Figure (cartoon, rainbow, N blue to C red):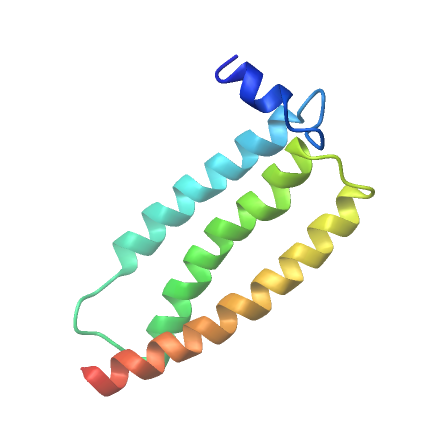
Amino acid sequence: MVNKDHFAAISYLRENPIIPMGFAAMVMQGLIMSVALRAWREGDATIANGFAIAAAFGVFLIAYITLVEPAKYETPDIFAWIRVEAFVGLVQFSAFGILLGLIHSKLG
């Protein structure tokens, strides 16, 4: 209903988005943000903490990429999309978490 003309002009959007996948992502993101921000402790910089924070925010973003995007866009295979994007996100945010922990443990 919002920006209907804008979204109608995008040719690869699903005609009927899969709304429950979007809601599932929003619930996951809310829970993840709550847990991650509650667990954050200033001055407690370790590789494990960096990995935990990056993992939490990685899952936050991966929830969007794996659930909302295939719900909005025409993809050849939803489950293949979820599998590939979840794996790539896991690798990306795991590496980032380790680097985040290393950097902050050296600065702290």
